[in-house]
Length: 151
Ligand code: DAT
Ligand code: MG
Image 1 (cartoon, rainbow, N blue to C red):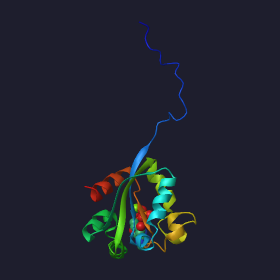
Image 2: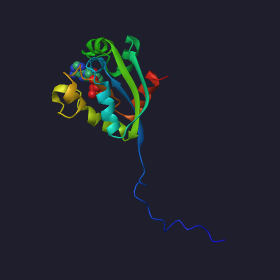
Image 3: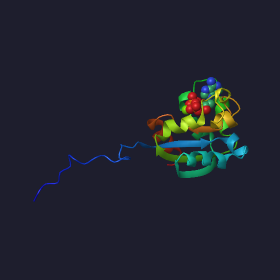
Image 4: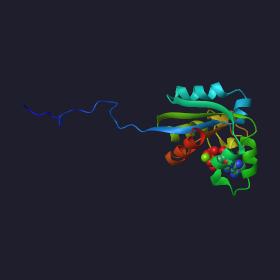
C-alpha cells in the first residue's frame, strides 16, 4: 500500500501554533464596590477570553501576604494588604490566547493615574494602590497564584 504523503499538505489558516495561557485575575475590593464586576468580565469576554473559574471572597490577610510575597519588604506592603483585604474581591481563572500579556494590556499600568482611557485602570482606577484589578504577570506567577487561590 502506498504510504501517506504529508509533505505536500498545505497549512490552513488558523493552523498556527496557539499559546493558550491561564491567568489569575482579581477584581479588587474597589472594583466590587464600584459595581463594575460585570463591565470587567464583559471586557474580558469581548476579547474572547474564557472565564474558567470564578468565586467571590474576602481575601484573608494570610492569603494576601502569600499572594504579594514579592513585595513584603516594600514600604507599601502594609497598606496594600489592608486594601486587598478590605472587602470582597472577585477571583477568576481566565484562559485564552496569550492571555497573560493581553489581559495586562487591557488592565493598563499599575499606577491608574498613568493608565490610558480605554484601559480598565485608566477608566476606573484611582491611583497605584486602588487600581481595580490584578492579572498574573508571567506563566510562573499564574501557576503559583492559581494554586494559591483555587487549591
Ligand atoms: P501589578 O498589580 O500591575 O502587577 P505589581 O505586581 O508591581 O503591579 O504590584 C502589586 C500591587 O502592589 C499593585 O497592584 C499595587 C501595589 N503597588 C505596586 N507598586 C506600588 C507603589 N510604588 N506604591 C504603592 N503601591 C504599589
Ligand atoms: Mg503584579
